[in-house]
Length: 270
Ligand SMILES: O=C(O)CCC(=O)C(=O)O
Ligand SMILES: [Fe+2]
Image (cartoon, rainbow, N blue to C red; front, side, top):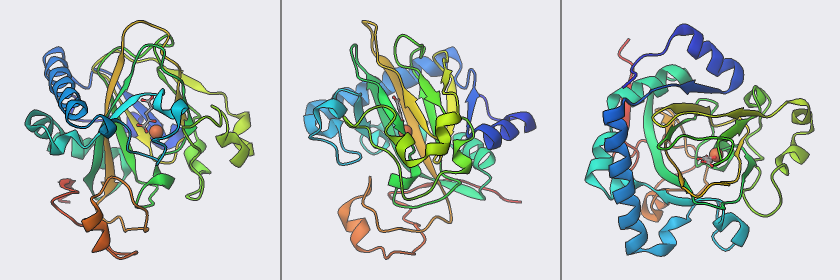
């Protein structure tokens, strides 16, 4: 596993709002991640088919349900995924790239674009989350090659610099570019497709606009993502990916320090 980033890579993340880490996983690690995630997804869908779509409250939107199969918090339901996700080395990379003093795992999710999946509309992640921070980051790991044909990601480089916390766009039937209505200045930014090989990772700022194409192949495009929050993040009142009882005992403005549901993955020591 790649465990360090160069100064140039960190600078490129700050400039563009995303960073490709080629060969994050070596071939043996990739095999282990694929097996663990496949098993965990199959188990979760088997237990509760509605567990596939839980984010953004768009479960009843038929367009959205055709974007990808999404399973959240597999680290809580599958031992092997838990061991892979709760890895200090991933936390250290996320800390370095985001410029925070340390990170907690906010949640994980598997994202499988089945054949004929709809595009993932342009959106930004962090405005939807239960904390707001320019240090929010996600590590999106390609479990299959992500190509122009099967739904690789696209970015609006630099959009994180002018993103606001009040507007995220939606993944529903409003259309792939609806987000641009809220950020007219982004209509000048050329969307950048990012094809990556399986085993590569992409760090994605919680404030950078991103999307993905449809899957026009007969094989699934599998990805697994870890979302990180800075260790000093505070609750903004939104409900998302945390059990109701945790939300009920947390006040707006509280530091989100629930070690059971939001485990610390890394803290800088100097
Ligand atoms: O994998 C995709 O199609 C998009 C993933 C994404 O936008 C996310 O996980 O926030
Ligand atoms: Fe996203």
